[in-house]
Length: 306
Image (cartoon, rainbow, N blue to C red; front, top):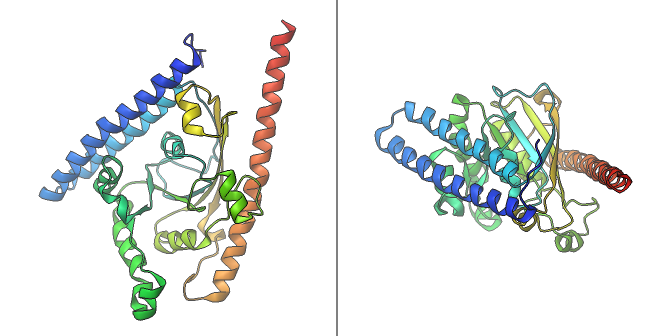
């Protein structure tokens, strides 16, 4: 990639502005198409919706490049743009969504969203138009009063995901449930370096809902190479040099499946499985960070020798 002649802070400002305008423009287009689809029930509109969504993803890729960010991606050859996947990833920043959606190798990245986000401009309205699943889980108290509610969210989400069959899709799940910070890591007393504890129930829920639709699980690690721990701020000011993304493909035949809510032995086994995945992620993150440090030191040495 050709090195920019602009100062880094200007690269970051241009990239951030482009991402904002990209989301606003395509968000409005997708919302309008979604309203037309809802009113007229024309299936072809779904094709136009995914075309617009693909353009938004392409815009995110351009925005990252304008911001001076190098994307270093390790993707298995088994992953196809014509496939269906569940992607489980560590969660560091709001920029995670942009980075994941910018990967041309992944078919249409989509997300499980909280029901409250449905009315958020651009994000919630666009997700609604693209038939992304909104989860409205019953509380423990509600389930105690009415045990039938236990499976209601599963069935509701299965109904929402039925349209995934018509378009290759990557459903993304941030198993930690929230973005990583040093404070949260300390408060949890997490046994994983640079990771919060995974919430196994969310991933088990996703597998239960999607087991008949997806080809496998994409176990994914994101690492941002920046001295500033606030990733969005680092990007805006041109201080984010690169993002490393490492993906491991696990076919459905190798994944433990079962009733997480109703089977205690399966619940314990799946929690152990997720902890094993997270331990592997911790090792991968250290390796990626060490590789970045060695490259930086090598670059500094070469500059000093000139």
